[in-house]
Image (tube, rainbow, N blue to C red; front, side, top):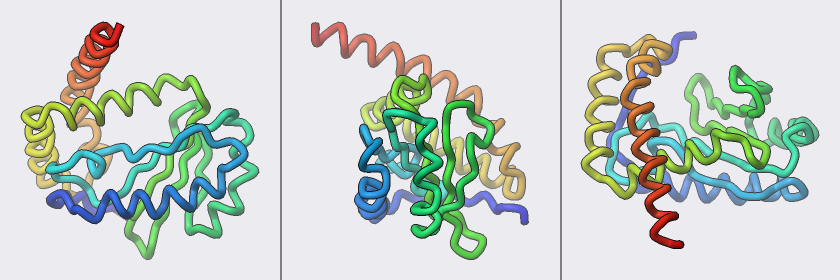
Length: 178
């Protein structure tokens, strides 16, 4: 089935939806858990987003994650393995044909952890860039309404630019702390 790309205004319920899910995930991954983070556009106040709560779980050993598959299934998630990203385990929660949550599990030290957190934190701290991202997403959601891959690809240059800016910004923060 083709997913329809729709973005909607920031919903103040999204952080609580994350918190609710994070409490359950904490119980599931307890023996391996390092941290849980709300990532993606629903974690950035004020911007439009697809209404899917993206959650990053960081664990001690990625190779141990499969032992939690049955618990994740009971919570409504589908284990998808790496799903195109080496070193990650992906679990979407789909109710009917609607994606409500995506859990991305990484082992400690995976390069995407810093990338995803920097992106989120940079946009939280730079509302003008967050607004530009929101406007781009809205435009692309109209253009690629039934083309998820096209929508994602069309955001790539913007996202890569923000990733560079976010890495520089984080380095400056660390330098100021020293």
